[in-house]
Length: 275
Image (cartoon, rainbow, N blue to C red; front, side):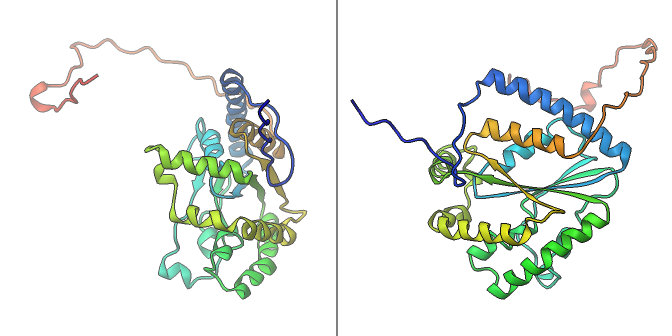
């Protein structure tokens, strides 16, 4: 008999349960998204300020769960912040300054697809900042977050954990799929050779920034479907909310049109009916 393939184990050493079927996943996701809409209304009603941070290795699934969270929400209430490379002006600022302007006002939920923790992770591992700047970050970051909490900001931090084998599989999938190829950056490829360095940087980051006011929560992410559902379920549990009675809206009677409402062909451009 042939050898049985070994189970993939995430970097935290915990085994994954069996995968969900598409039917199970869609049903559970729909239920979770209904609850997210209720949470959104509660955040508006109570004028809460909520920040959710998504960090983890490249291809860990952060973007996927953010898409499922925002899919049914109002983008005037729930915003996604995914900052690019800092400009020359931003490089001269206090490190946290470029993030401060994206923090929520009352009644807002802001999701950070990578955040100020980039300095403690990829930027540290790739040598973009000197070690002195990293140590200063570890001293400053907990105080920065405590200041936000005192100002009424709820901070929820997630780290998406995947195995080396699963990350490699996702990288290859991106390389082979033209609709996903844009996701595979030179930084992603460089990270493949620095698995241990990323692990060490993660552990030290947890050591300094896993505080009582803003703790880290690890999401086992080798199974994308379960990771998304587990993360959303946990997020819903972090903010006690109640379902609000929606305002009753009556549809007024539409007046009859005297003439059919069709654009004048001579004054209009039509999209060709290809399909």
